[in-house]
Length: 244
Image (cartoon, rainbow, N blue to C red; front, side, top):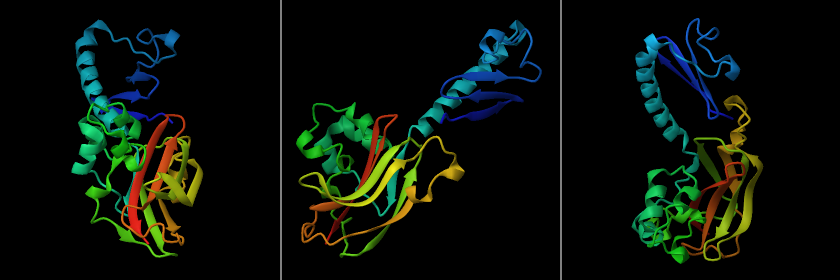
């Protein structure tokens, strides 16, 4: 779904989408001022109005840049409090990747992968597993979930990208799922409007099973929320540490 933004400048409306824009002015949606070959999607100002239009366009482009930054964010778990970044993550992931991860908790992991530098430690960082966040930075943020515990989750989705998602208990050492808790075959469908968004994509419960002693020590297991946007080819993750 293309985000459409309406910005008002002195009774003029700029309608913007990711694909194209048009300038709409009273009485100027047809006639010689409009490029008819472009089906009205371009406005050619008259010479007398050029300077005013150019100034307004600069204002518009500056605002558009801010809006693009705002919609660049995507999604993350807000409850329970997931793993956060700290000095251990900085040491493991290096400054380049860390700065990207730390600047926007909602951003896709691929953004950080593009900024990996010489200080990136692949064996320690694990960008695509718990988003590079390290246990050492989250020792006081580990919970105890007995078998049968129902855990409420809240997810903030800042921009919808159609894909699929799941929530699983993961073995942190092996970096493998050991129990699937929730699955969405289709997630964050960007062809739907806000009134149609399934509520269980952002608010849901999971029940922690009996894990047979595999998660007895801190750092052995986490509950990981994982979402992959198939069209944009972007990955989003949050991990919640626990013991049982």
